Image (cartoon, rainbow, N blue to C red; front, side, top):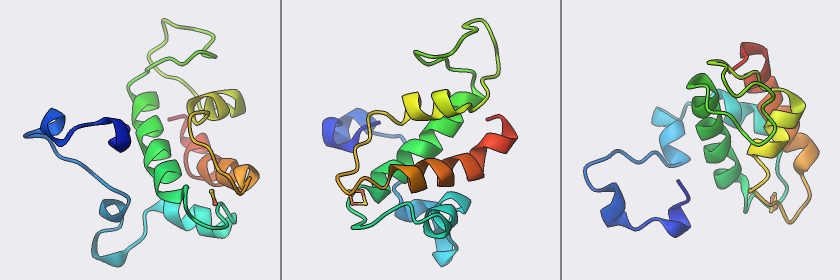
Length: 115
Ligand code: FES
């Protein structure tokens, strides 16, 4: 969900996980660690959205939700190919142009699990 386009009342009774919620007790999520390892940010302005979108994207893949570039729309599992990753993250803009690090961090975290 895009928080900037979602009214709180639309999520009434449902849980909301922010980027801070991905690191309970200060232990960073694997993707947060990968962003640091791969220099996936410069100013950090877009980073919470990039990370939350990538985690949501991984959940969509696990559910077999196809994207515009998914070849087999009938499949139950979608592998995180470079094209899938870039398509699914295409709505997230980074004014610093840290895309190579962002893609590397997401691929490092999720590609090998085919989720
Ligand atoms: Fe600056 Fe993405 S790191 S906008």
